[in-house]
Length: 117
Image 1 (cartoon, rainbow, N blue to C red):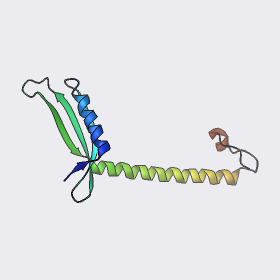
Image 2 (cartoon, rainbow, N blue to C red; image 1 turned 120 degrees about the horizontal axis):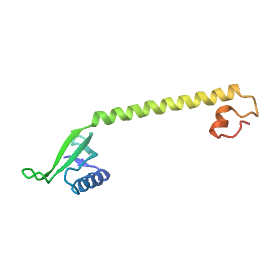
Image 3 (tube, rainbow, N blue to C red; image 1 turned 135 degrees about the horizontal axis):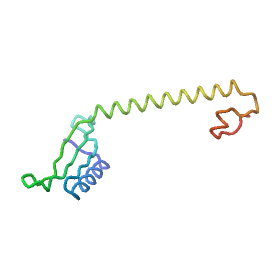
Image 4 (cartoon, one colour; image 1 turned 180 degrees about the horizontal axis):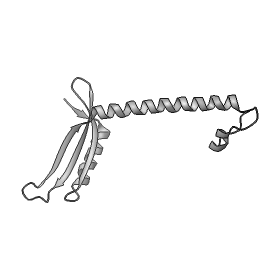
């Protein structure tokens, strides 16, 4: 059994509502599902309003599994955060080592931090 999470169901419903408002309109929705074995998959649905096409007269939906893309995005964000943390720590260490006591470091001055004690 597959289930879309509740918050995702609302996003999908809004995307579908939007696409029904005008012929030719296209919209996308991303959501996660839990499979029977408990794993989570991410899906992207693209809706296209083709109600104005006489032989079709439908909302066309295309479904795509984007689980690997979502995992790669999370990994990139984690690596970026780790790098930002290292840079912030290095900057703080450099400020402490290179700034005389009672003098505000250039980084602190430009970033609006209070002077070092």
